[in-house]
Amino acid sequence: MPNQNNKRIPTFVLSALTAACFAAGTACMAAEAASGTAPAADSALPAAAQQGDVQFLSGGVGLDESKAIKAAAAKWPLSLEFIGGSRDYVSDVALVIVDDKGSKILETSSQGPYMLVRLKPGTYTVQASYSGHEQKKQVKVAGNGHAKLRFNWQAQ
Image 1 (cartoon, rainbow, N blue to C red):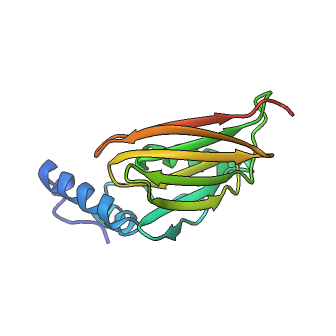
Image 2 (cartoon, rainbow, N blue to C red):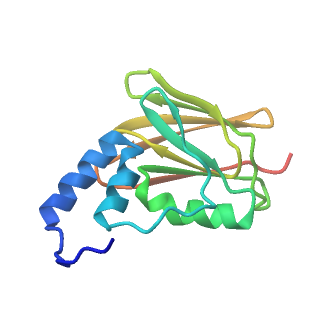
């Protein structure tokens, strides 16, 4: 039912909602939808998974799914892209994310060429292995920012 009063939500309320959503993970989507500040969820977006405190999703094999992931990327603190040597996208990339204290916080395999990860602000090392070749990159995730890493393996 539409809001009969047609009142706008004050900016400070949205800022608090955004901060709370970052901490709450999946509750964010429901809170944004209830407030009318976010579009309805795209049905092509793959389901998110949870490992410990880290929420993530992976995919992008089909055109609809890859477009949905690219559109959603700005709302996630970290996006990862996996490319082969001649710009061929790859999947089944073994991924490990380690925090600045050396603790492994995520260990998974990609289900496609894209992965979105909801991390707390901090510095992380991302280890990606594909076809027996490992790459390590460090990334800083800011409190209100978005970081992106691209892993590219030359054709074997």
